[in-house]
Image (cartoon, rainbow, N blue to C red; front, side, top):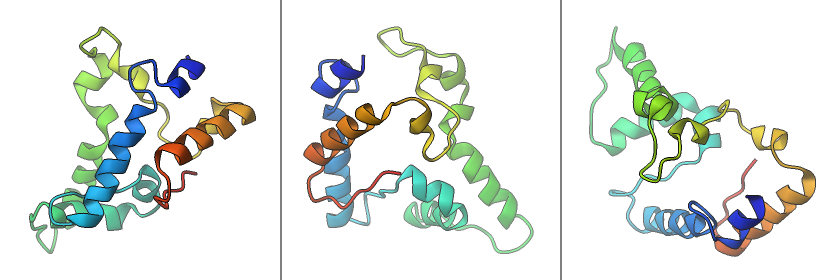
Length: 137
């Protein structure tokens, strides 16, 4: 499965990175219409990222008593693993959607890839995102 992913011959293979690169590039060119953030940023700077989303969507978060609740609600709603369809649904080709979600910890990939696999993934990403400045932890 890993080798097929790296060669781009399975669904969600390295062509995914071209999609990511195009959105990164688009977010730099059109900040009003494309918001780009990394999972690591969401985890490390949760309150900042929670504020960015409604600002980007041009929604206001009321000052006062409900502010924390709304922020917590946004965090909950942004956690895609909480959605019922992602717990019990399937993709259009019959793959259970829950396989796309793990613990949600930065660096958890280390529990799933051996060092040579990590090097290969880094090479695939660098090849697909040249000069992007994106660094994954």
